[in-house]
Image (cartoon, rainbow, N blue to C red; front, side, top):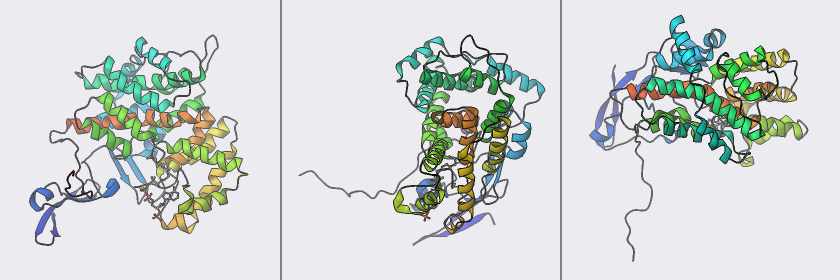
Amino acid sequence: MNTAKLILPEQEVELPIVVGSEFEKALDISKLRGTTGFITLDSGYGNTGSCKSAITFINGEKGILRYRGYPIEEIADKCSFLETAYLLIYGNLPNAEQKAAFQDNVTSHTLIHEDMKKFFEGYPSNAHPMAILASMFTSLSTFYPNNQDTDLDIVRLIAKAPTIAAFSYKKSVGQPFVYPRNDLEYASNFLQMMWAVPAQEYEVSPAVRDALNLLLILHADHEQNCSTSTVRMVGSSQANLFASMAAGVSALWGPLHGGANQKVIEMLQRIRDDGGDYKKYMAMAKDKDSGFRLMGFGHRVYKNFDPRARILEKAAGRVLSELGLSDPLLDIAKNLEEIALADEYFVERKLYPNVDFYSGIIYRAMGIPTEMFTVMFALGRLPGWIAQWKEMRDDPKGRIYRPRQVYVGATERHLD
Ligand code: CMC
């Protein structure tokens, strides 16, 4: 059966059925309005496939996440972040030669133009680093305006994003910027730009480096989420790569999306400061009038464990013990998870911890300030945004994104 019948008040139409490589089923409604005058209405796009994509597969019922076919658990175990980025963007893992070339290329583009440093001077020291990141991404298009070589722009973005992120942190604490070092791999280079200070030796901790690599990989893509759809939406008008990525950063910033990692830690701190009574907050999360949600819980697609959260829960304990730290917030988080998973409200709605629930505990252990958490998410998500942008732009049948609406406002009226 490769069509479905739609029975409308005065007509019937056959709609093609599209089946994905993992047997996901869709109705192709692209000719619906033209032939019937009807559009579909799907607030929040919960049932709308906006594209066909070969990058990331999620089965939310079974808690499966794969990049280009590889299970996230295997990638997290065996790959570096740059290999993962290459896989997402170009479709296959790089061979030894491609890997070396990609790494060299990224390493040789980590500096930002000296004139860009002046922008940082203009921001208040308490500027949110997500605002700076979005502005700086857009600014890159003023330095590289020609759009002739997409691969080069891709490398520039991946290479310069950590420099911009670390500079925004240095600005916030009033320390001099630390320049990228070409002898260090991606994660270590970022860490030294964050923590090194002039005239003092800085040695990258392998535990922190590995934790960062893991976090970046787990965030690298997640198919058509809010920020990725934004990137595709903006890119569909043929806006340049840098401007499209800046839009992704802005979409990610919100607390219902990437901003949740900051909110999780703020929530756990609030519970701790309020005496650690996590049951009280559980009751508030269930009370719709409280305005309080359990941050780091729930997901539009996962109706089972988010596989990234499972990996991160284990990693949080491991990283804390490797660094010889303990964090009361981890205990509060574990207690919250335990009672939520047994609570009828959460069970009924299939609300599980998501990627943001444990990531903040690890960022804290690494010494990353809370305001930088969503920037860390953005650094990780960047290859995914780029891969999705490139897939859309390379599609010969690609069209500008332009949804319809059902108008419910005033009918025609006139001025007296
Ligand atoms: N705490 C309490 N109740 C919740 C929560 C939560 N965290 N999440 C969902 N619900 C309830 C919601 O009130 C609704 O109840 P009812 O059916 O009685 O009206 C039901 O569960 C379905 O929720 P929804 O808001 O319709 O679901 P959604 O798919 O529109 O939203 C979500 C998904 C992630 C925005 C939402 O679960 C949420 O706000 N979670 C907290 C924020 C968060 O952790 N965001 C990070 C998402 S993962 C990282 C990323 O990809 O961005």
